[in-house]
Length: 88
Image (cartoon, rainbow, N blue to C red; front, side, top):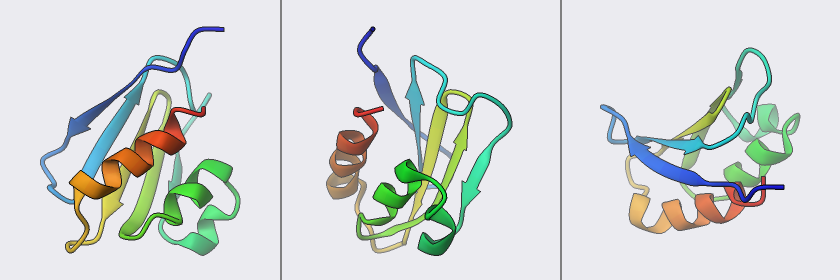
């Protein structure tokens, strides 16, 4: 089994960051979680919402976009997000 490769990609929205994988994460369609209650359906989203400042999670074929609060810092949050996503 190959190692999960992951890269961060900025978006036009400074409060959103795209994390692109070298494999399929969502086989069909998309998944959107706007709060922690909705994230209960997804182990990945549930873990991401445990990070302070995460406001929403959007997942599609080979990427996950995370939106943060205006006061959140990508410098702090990105390493926590990557730690979770590398386990996929």
